[in-house]
Length: 115
Length: 116
Image 1 (cartoon, each protein chain N blue to C red):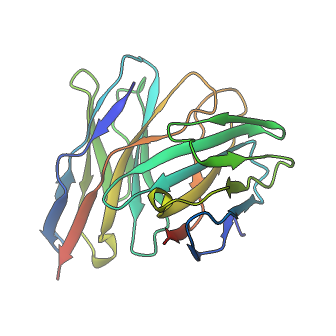
Image 2: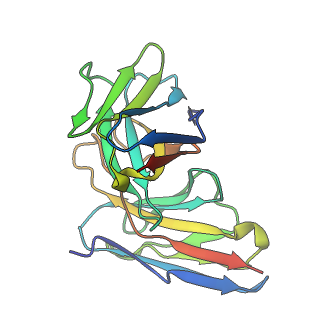
């Protein structure tokens, strides 16, 4: 019963490098989300997706890109890493059938440092 | 835009006692959901309890209960019979209702310390 799986768990990047944070879920959820959590703060929404091929910006999308080619996977891409992107990144998924409440389930997070 | 405020950066309670964590929110919506999430040192975000705004009855999950005051836009979490395993960061979160894939809006969190 994996739920939402994120890889890697930790990563150190140099300024200007690129990387992809992986997220996969095995619950057949239609909605998926990426959040970032800065020290001493709550999570903030970066991007979200309502289904394969459909993505949209959240509150803090600058410097990131996403794609959703399958229901299961929702990778987050950092093209030119900056120190301001040092954070913990969380992927989440949820299921909404009739537009009602959807409970978000979170992965364990990826701690990223940009030096 | 909606905001969520947790005014207690840190709370401390003796094991087996009761503690209440505060949360206020601001929204112009009438249909929404409120949540409390627990984040232990492992970083995993764990849903503790949720409340639908259209329900007047306060939600309860075992030792966890909420006091939802819609008019005051207040949503506090009460933990009864505190246990050492309750020590964690607790985040209050809001989501607009009416369907859609809206993300959660989080407060800054309250660090709960359990004294043995």
